[in-house]
Each structure stands twice: as C-alpha cells, then as structure tokens.
Image (tube, rainbow, N blue to C red):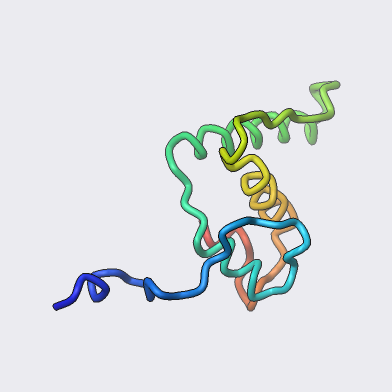
Length: 101
C-alpha cells in the first residue's frame, strides 16, 4: 500500500493556492466549499457571526456591519468568501452550500 491510497481524495488534484473573489464558476465554487475545513476556531467565528446576524434579522440591534481582522495570509478573504456562499446558499453542481458543512 502506498501513502496516497490512505487519502479519500486524490492528493495530486489541482488546488487553488490563492482564493480570488473573481473565481465564480460552479466547479471552482464547488471545490472551495468541498475543500474548506472548519476548525474549532473557525466554528467559533461562524457561530459568533450568525448569532449577531440573527440579531439583525430579529431587529434587536442597530449594529449593521462586521469587522474581520487578522494577519496577512490568515484566511480573512477565504472566510468571507465561504460565508458569502453560505448566506446565499445557492445550489452548486446540485448541492446547496450549507450541505457541505
């Protein structure tokens, strides 16, 4: 058995090294959603966002924005792009964004 055989996905598949806003074709979006790994830290940030987002929907806050901060290369843009997919929740190659999580 070779090491590559223990992985679920092909380890030689093409991966995007940099996430770009303009990459909007369905195959690219599908791969971004499929490859995104939600760590415990990210789970906290998603939960905090949705908790505050719900307050805006319920009308119990006047705070209308969010601030995403972090060091260069820490994943701010990637987090925001995934968040936008989840909020839109449109079907991507027959699967809704939320179903990836």
